[in-house]
Image (cartoon, rainbow, N blue to C red; front, side, top):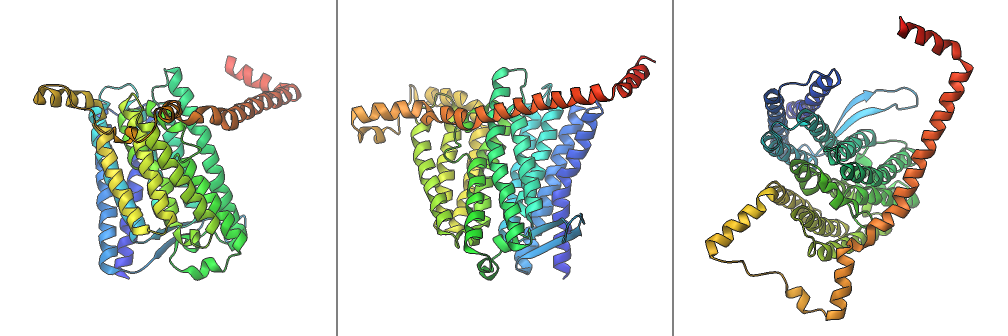
Length: 454
């Protein structure tokens, strides 16, 4: 009992530390009183250090005590329907390990960002979004019900899109951020649909039904309900992890600062979908269709990314597609039921890509150093694959890879154009409704204008 109480306290400290950082930096920005750069950097570093120490300690307590799956609930926060909306956390070895990994990576990126973004005009804005992301990824890792999971999922997606548009004075970054946000809407819609369906089918939003080790709870659900929820989770994971056919947004997300690319699209955010599928392994085992869908998307994504990464002309895009290749393999491992291998692959790949993305700005400097040390240009490597393919086929594959599978055109027609049309229609509807209100209640606005004049 004592170990469970200490683990609960440490978990709350781990999640609360970046949440407090978000509130402090966000409030200072709202009131247009941003903190000095040195204070922001110190607070961010201290917050990430406290979070990692707390969650790491909770993981050690769990490994020592081995209490099994622990569900921590803080009661109903809404009484609008039976059962209300509770804040629940699900603590086990996998959730605490991924949360500790996320906090450790966030601490490294925070220290790197403090130096990399020194005297950048959007320095404080970056750390507000960074704190939002860390809070969201910890909620995703430790969520005990779909409400907490969806809240964390939204925080991760919103902070990702806003950091892609970090340099908002450039039109290309804003356009690419809108692309990312549009694809994330599909992922979020699938996640929300799965949450609603889980409430309807199971009568509860507890993730212990889906993520727990007990199969009896899942087997109690109807076969159609299990398959539908599992397929929706696969779609949600595909959108967040840039699996096919949603891979087109990934290279465009490289417009953000290098530290955000490292933590989002190299180490943590791109693996959030994989972690979701990994946690939902017991559910996938009850749905052959969902496992086949996940495995097919993983294989197709790995093959597609292997081709595309070989023709990229910039290091960040090349690293992005190389990361996507490994993400596809991880999804295949999950579909095959190799959960331990998949988690170790996820953790190792996240750390490796973090190092590569953070060192990406120095890649040319390192290359020139190697060439100076060897006394000439380095010999080309990695071309054995090309020698096995006929010339005519190689040309077609090159065109397919250089155009990135023509996914931009597909996303434009199926996602972006309908999304733009919907937003324009809602904007016109908003103006129309505002005009009606103004015409029907002119005296209110007249009084407001008189008050302003006074």
